[in-house]
Image (cartoon, rainbow, N blue to C red):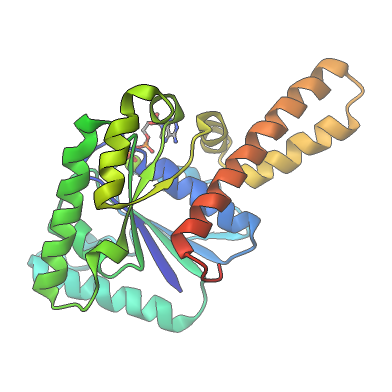
Amino acid sequence: MKVISAASSKGGAGKSSLVIGIASYLHWKKKKTMILDLDPQGSVALWLSNQFEDIDPIDPDLLSVEALVPDGNDETKIRVIANRLGELAESGDYDYLLIDTKGEQAKITSAIGAYSDFVLCPTNGHAIEFEPVVKTYMNLSTVIKELGLPTDPDKLFSVILSKRKVVESGEVRSSQKMLAERFNVIPGPTESASYNQAIQFGTTIDRLLSTVQTIRDTSEVAKLRANAKRACERHEKSLETLDFMMTQLLNGEEL
Ligand SMILES: Nc1ncnc2c1ncn2[C@@H]1O[C@H](COP(=O)(O)OP(=O)(O)O)[C@@H](O)[C@H]1O
Ligand SMILES: [Mg+2]
């Protein structure tokens, strides 16, 4: 089981959307995926509450450390999380575990990252977002050292460029280059309309795609067909972008 967590000290950076995008992609690729929402905002849990049969949601409280060890100190909580992740990995029931984390840097968030295979930090790459990126990385490195793990934070941590309007504007090109000199930077989700629709309908992007494909191919109404065609292109592009991102992330490893 591979564990991917989304982390950034910045709220609204795109963590929850990224988790929903990757979940959609893995669903499309028929991978058994478990999702864990550790963000009190609960965006992913809300999305999951429309339970799909193939994406296996878990009770969002299951790994809520506050519920497991209400009065434990950080060390106890971190140990409980590590054990739980170990149990899940050993069960062999899932190919992937995706974790959405809090938009603030609690030690627990960094510890979850330390026990993950990949920590993804979404940003639009603008210089004003350097601070949360660097902070997220620094906290992760510190916790890895404290826990005495052999993990290399530079291999664990990737910056994911999201939010196309900003990402593709000339204004941020030089700041993105600076980020890429220091971190593993990968282009990420860009088609916000796909995400917003997936969230709105409580479904995955690939399911939205198959619905609009049916409309495109069967509708008698020309206007519906044309709209469905545009929607198809959008969702296809979305899945393509996710495919590119995951391929880069896995660096030749099999999905
Ligand atoms: N790749 C993206 N492109 C455009 N808009 C995005 C993208 N990712 C997120 N957003 C928008 O940014 C806002 C915050 O995203 P969200 O995923 O909830 O961030 P976080 O979980 O880090 O707080 C949402 O309105 C979402 O629609
Ligand atoms: Mg969120």
